[in-house]
Amino acid sequence: MVGNLIKNPKLLEIKDNKVEKLKVDNFALISNDKKGGKKYHSCSAYGEKAKGMENLKQGDFIKVFGQTKIGLGDDGKKYTNIRVLSSKLLKAKEKDQDKSSKKELILGSIKKYKAEDMGKDMDKADKK
Image 1: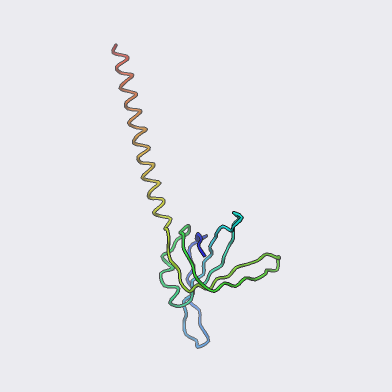
Image 2 (image 1 turned 120 degrees about the horizontal axis):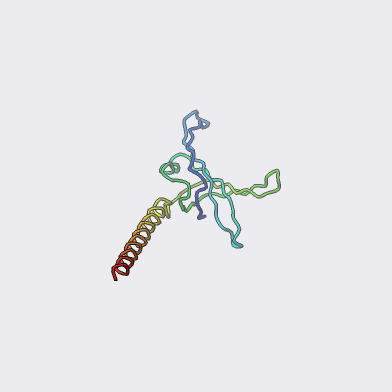
């Protein structure tokens, strides 16, 4: 399943049956279905699978592989829960922001250059 993180993952420590501490990382993903609608997925990564999840941020595009369980809520809606077996960051949101800020800087430079160039043309016209 491929999707975007809705919010930053939440890392918890719980006690298992043997009273040992176990790390659990809970997060939610949003993806598009075949009809173009949005689907929400609750995900949980346990133990070693939770490593590296704390580095993920809201908006990151990730691929998750795991055991899927579909349940029906009290409100009649279908809910998807995924127990993560492996995950991979496909595209970090921060990289997209860096590209857009560079693009804005370039566009700003072009506008500034054009404004200065127009000012020079005006000065030449005044001198004539």
